[in-house]
Length: 588
Image 1 (cartoon, rainbow, N blue to C red):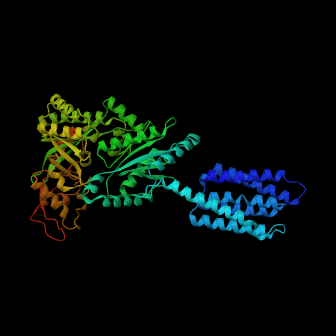
Image 2 (cartoon, rainbow, N blue to C red):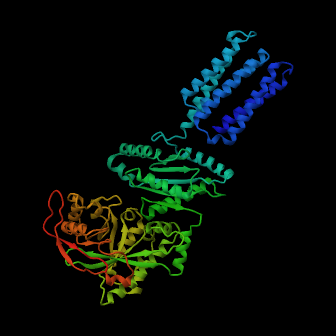
Image 3 (cartoon, rainbow, N blue to C red):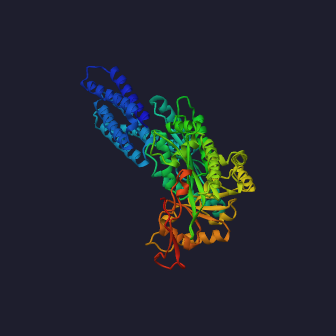
């Protein structure tokens, strides 16, 4: 719009100056035409250079300014012939308005221009009053035709279901953004977003429900994206987002906000344009990022970046120099007598550049930098070695070792073989190893991941759903999932307070898992009261800071029960059944 409007202003000014230069220069009115002509040229140049910073209303006001300048040029024309020639420029104003402005605004502007032209021409003594009808009619014909054709062409770039840009409109916008990035040096960033399990909605509720869901997602996301961003429905349940003025970090944070704005899970892949990249190359990198995010477990964002990450470099160096550390958080049986029944291995990353980095952030960087496989293998080998030593010590006894595995690593076709090799090399029994996999990773529908899980279970090891409740949380799927244990997310436990009522959802999950003969480890137990309520509900395994924080292997022997006492929690509503044991287990 800025370039077209600026070009029309400059063209009108140049033609006006040319016509004025051809006129006899002895008329005083001729001198008034030069400032109008050169003013149009200057406005046109300014719009081409800086017009992208203006809003639509500014262009509408500039069109009124153009109308006033053209009216002045018509009135100051020294002859009737020149006046009629000048009135022909009204078609340019109508063309611009009809193409870019809403219909109502365009029509109002054309009426104002037509009335002004006819009035000024009619007031001239050398012309009849009706002489302006030809120019005004031509203006409306040109404007109307351009408006209709322009909107028909625009509709070809619009998705009729959501009102967003479609694939063609997105690619057109991306080409423009890349061309601008070449000139300005500001790289555009794109994201592909795929709705998780959308096919299940279509299959279960029908395509009409699926269409309603797509419209709801589009409406929820429209208010989240920036004014300069382009949100498109790329096809099916896949959306695309173009951010011409954002950084990779901004894009990752925006996809997290988009994910939080809808009830359905969403997986995203982000990539930024780099000098030399074509549109296809950039789109291909975003596709790769989306594919990796799905393999890692869905409902997350992956970044395919060429920019070096300081944290990734530190992780790479730590892995190469064997500087990673592994801590262990105990898993307790919470009914009396309380005791440690297992430990969970948790990697620790030494970082000097970003000391506030969380474990989840570091894992995400490792997945994006192709370091996660090496880290997972390091933790598994290190944990098995430590578990063997702990099991042989008279001060500690480890029944089960829990180790987390990334969805990307689980999808590696050789993973089960590597696990078997590590168990054989370290001597840790396969039937005492529990591999924790997130619920979203199990739902990634990666054939190699399921094959690995089947081979690992056949060898005697167990599979646990980690952070259960943060994914799709369909309790009925517990019966069909190839898992042996559930690790309930800590968000369920945070709702347990002395002021809250009986946690019915937790009671239902306990009953269901008991019916399926599936052990449950409750994460995030922060208080003795929470442990007491969980024990009363029938849960037997728990971990959390109240029971024991992650510590090095050498300090595990210090985390022992210091005593137990009976405690009856005062839960409003229906009473709990019988006395409840409360652990008072703290590190010395």
